[in-house]
Image 1 (cartoon, rainbow, N blue to C red):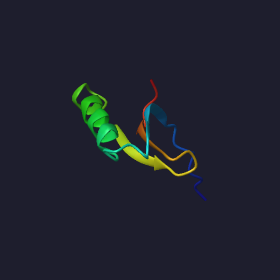
Image 2: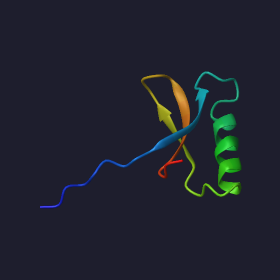
Image 3: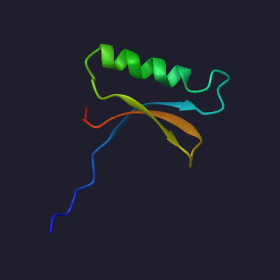
Length: 60
C-alpha cells in the first residue's frame, strides 16, 4: 500500500477576495512570479479566510 505524503506549499502572497478587480491582482502577481522563475506559482481560493492565495509547491 502506498501512502501519499502531504504536499509542501508556500504562500507567496495573499489578496482579498472582495477586491473590485476580483482575482486579477493575484493572477498578475502569479504571472510575475512565473516570469521571475517560480514556474509553478498559481492562484487558489482560501474560502475560510475569503482570500486569493498565490502559492508554489516549492519551498523558499
